[in-house]
Structures are given as structure tokens and as C-alpha cells.
Amino acid sequence: MDCIVRDLTGKGARLKFPGPVVVPPIFELRLLDRGERRPAHKVWVRDGEMGAAFD
Image 1: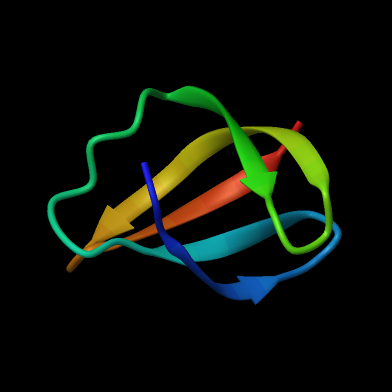
Image 2: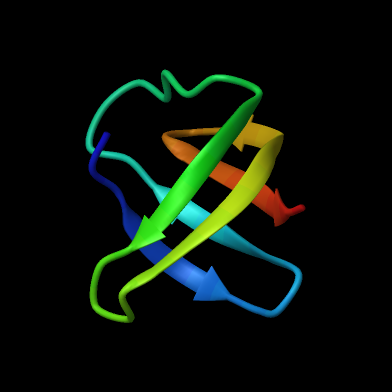
């Protein structure tokens, strides 16, 4: 699912989605511009945004 990374730290990220957030509790975040893949889990969801923590 495509999203925009709003905030990125070494511990996690705030993600913005164009529609409803339909992401499983555990997922892999692909940062295409960096060529990285980060295992992560959902922390919170609110108003089309989601907080994720890196595992």
C-alpha cells in the first residue's frame, strides 16, 4: 500500500495514507528512495495516518 512518510527516525515513522489505513499489525516498510526495507509494527492509527515502530 502506498503512503507518504511524514516523520522518520531510527525508531519509527509517521505514515500518511490516501484513504483508509488497511495495514496488518506487523508489516515491512519499504523506503524506495533509500532502497531500504524495515520490519515494523503498527502503534496507532488516526485520521488517515499511522504510527509505526521499527522492529
